[in-house]
Image: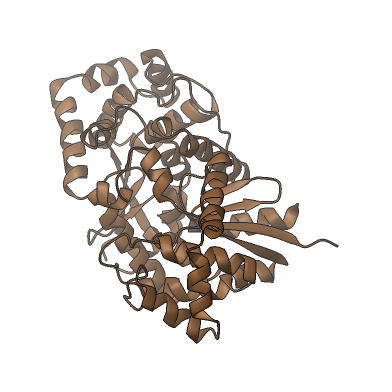
Length: 200
Length: 200
């Protein structure tokens, strides 16, 4: 019997992706669903929509609501939440490391650690030293991985992931994609996405 | 003992406002919370953000997701859902009638009937005859109400409601506002908003 899989598409700069990253693996496992971690970059998608930065910056009332909403939800879930400065964080290097992590099997632990550093511990995730410390704490060879993250094949794989995201209709993060292609946008839809994947 | 109240800010053109309109009164009542129905217009708010139409039209991938999301949710809740043509519908006249309904006490029934006509029965809600038929079915004096809806005082009250929405930080619909000013955006947040109102 093949196990059901749910793709989890996320950007490290995305606040609501933080919410999902911290719970998706445990929640999906309870339903017998495996998670396929799919780091990508929202920046090119936003740029194609004519946005120079996060919509939470472009539309300040929406941004204020997002922060308050995150505070309430994180309070319920026992998660810390602080708005990073600057917001959004530059997620490029972290996404490249995560792309290596997909190939090497450390993507889930690395992703949770980066989101925690960013939104709980107020660390700048564009800073190499922050990512190195995370990899070291995970017992990984940080020097080798950082170097690999910045090679052309890794850059190309991340670019291909972002192009795949666009091609399957992704416009924001987090997005969940079931095996039949059904898309679910937003942490609010995670339970529904897992249930959908279970029923396939 | 004063009853807790939750303001429900909505635009008749808004798909997610439909979801909330059909359940808010019963859900709030179960928690001992009264609903204050606050029709307003999203159009001026979108225009101020530089949008000429709904973001679901401006960003087609987002629009496709919204329709599929509504289909799934309405299926769960036993609600019909069809995308109106054109989308979004012009909600001005319906909002003016609802503004009369706030003053005269028929706003809740009228609002549910308009949303049902629009999203379940595929009727054009900008059409006077559609609104007249709804008022008639509610046993109301449709001729008098339609006339009153188009007087300057009613127009001014609706404009004031929209200005109030902007001033309290509303940027989309549905939005729920508790007695202490706490804002909750989106049908996804209705349960949380009711709970918040209960605890005040």
